[in-house]
Image 1 (cartoon, helix red, strand yellow):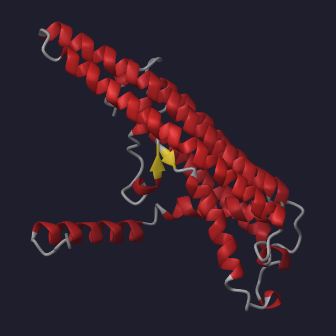
Image 2 (image 1 turned 90 degrees about the vertical axis):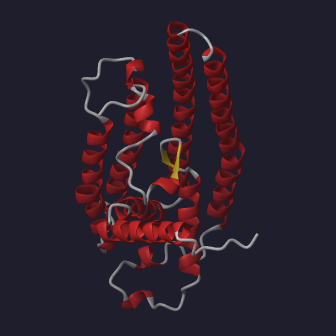
Image 3 (image 1 turned 45 degrees about the vertical axis):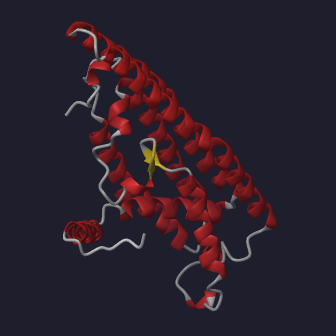
Length: 270
């Protein structure tokens, strides 16, 4: 189904819809690359681990390249992704995962490992280097994470500000033309939508550059085991969104909340 502003596409709509591309990309991630990396992380021989880590890294980077290309054809299909379910939506920022998620995920691995040091690494069926990858991480890694987080705090707010300005300009332009005759109204609306979509394309590509940069910087700052575990965790996070039981439970909880609100069962303490 074409996006709501597909008439502004810069190319003919003959390419594979991004929804179909994402499904193929996701299946490769889940069924091929993730099992290969997991196999290497479970093997006592790490010879293939750097190669398989890099395969998964390139898979993520190629995805963001493809996201940019699809947005250049029809940015609306990326801004309003129909292939995302209700469980994924809270984690999205300008069409894809919020860049804060990457550093938060990394922090969670470090915190979990250092809050659970009582396990005996030798008794578990994983290489010692994997089990201890996040325990007492070097100060250099912690400093680099803090630098990445500082960069995000500086770069994300301007993107949000640009989106607000684009939306405000769009509303103003449409409102100015609304009292015109039908022909001028349609022309004015079309021109306003076109200007908004062009600006939103630039903002979205900026967000994608930021996402790519954060992933690359984390992997480069980590050792081979840490980098592989981070990418494995990110991939498992995405796979978890497609868990039908989890999505079903989320929808049931959402429906129960709505029924409770509509039925007057919720009382806000204001």
